[in-house]
Amino acid sequence: MKQILLSLLLAAPLTAAAQSITTQVMSDIQKAHPVTAQDRAVRNALAANGIDALATSAYTAASTDTYFSNEAPSKGITDQKSSGRCWLFTGLNVMRAKVIEEQGIGSFQFSQSFCFFYDQLEKSNLFLQSIIDKGNLPMSDQTVEWLFKNPLSDGGTFTGVQDIVSKYGVVPAEIMPESYNANNTSKMASIISLKLRQWGLELRKMVAEKQKMNKIQARKVEMLGEVYHILSVCLGVPPTEFTYQFKDASGRPIGEKKTYTPKSFYDEYVGWDLQNNYVLLMNDPTRPYYKTYSIDLDRHMYDGHDWTYINLPMDEIKQMGIASICDSTRMYFSCDVGKCLNRKTGILSLDNFNYEDLFGTSFPMTKAERIQTFASASSHAMTLCAVDLNAEGKPTKWKVENSWGADYGVQGHLVMTDEWFDEYMFRLVVEKRFVPEATLKLLEQKPTVLPAWDPLFLEED
Image (cartoon, rainbow, N blue to C red; front, side, top):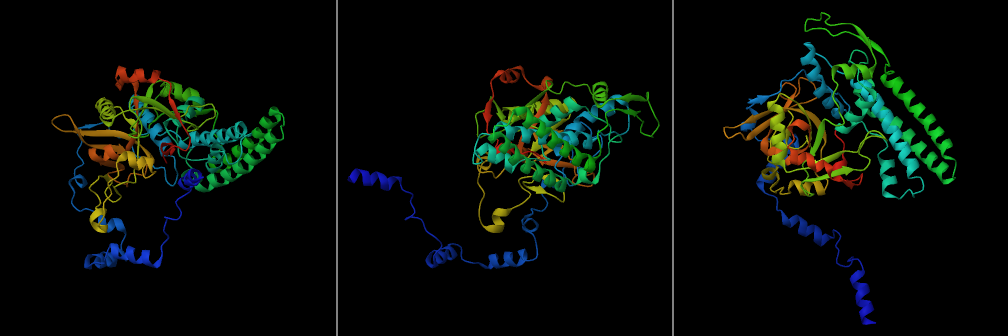
């Protein structure tokens, strides 16, 4: 009997030992950090200033050094405005550099609205079909719950660029220009998301009633018809055919005026095998290196590709990035851009802010610990375009072309120290020709599939 009681006591939650904030505990809390004259001075300063204003480290070397030894030159800065389409801007910016160079034109952009239209339609289908597939599971199932929490997003990854462009093609920006709702996506997304949740419940009911699958699929198509209508009202109707002629830097027509479909335009002027030409790399110190991983439902299309990557040490990723830049080839790159970013200078440096001295504490978590606790994840995609190498060939800083407009940062770019790169860079997409053979062989592995709620699922926006 005593043994049973002991087992029950050991299994019980330790509520008796837990403390609430009683008067005595409050007193102990207050005594832990007695208020000093410095504290009062900081408190007075923070009453009229933001934390970063007081924590900013003035005159750091990184704030003035914007020279780069190796650079793949910019082809013009884009602006995603108040939208989460950085992944799309970045992917299309990598492609347009080739078009500008090969066609000898002054400037050019692909239509982000065209690709984004189909991205939102495909993501809506991904949600609705996934709800049907999981229709027999309870609402409390973790995947079902995750789907209803995340029915639609304007964020994404390079796999979205691969799948959307491969299926639908591309058009020049003039053919389907930006609109207010392309630049400001939140309201449109919230309206479509509300409809998707409503329809998700309806589809689950049809599955529970064991209605025929062809009837369920027909109803889903009707739902997607409503999504298409909302998108066309907000973004415009994507062209299926158009006539186009390139112009040189002075605006004079060059080449032949021709009629294209979005697919034929892509095939003629870009022509890359998007699905097989690139390797997706990740630096995730929470998991073993030299392994491949994929994240369930981290895709843009139901029949598309989940984000699948090789996890590598940072030094090896850097070497591929350097090789690509030295060949004037720009890359899709993503990072946790909000960390240690001086928004006035556009510099990303671990020395930008001194929160430790301001608050009299420390922040010792490693990159792995920040990932595990959701304190850091890939949040924004940009185009990696420059590296500065020292006499020993080691990188000291990096530069990315951003999509926040030409007036932001260093003429539309952000500059990051190599130490910052180590801590907050997550993803790099490189052409296979810059990847060592031994690394390419890792793609033969069967990827370890991570759940949709993994900390590194977060899409770039």
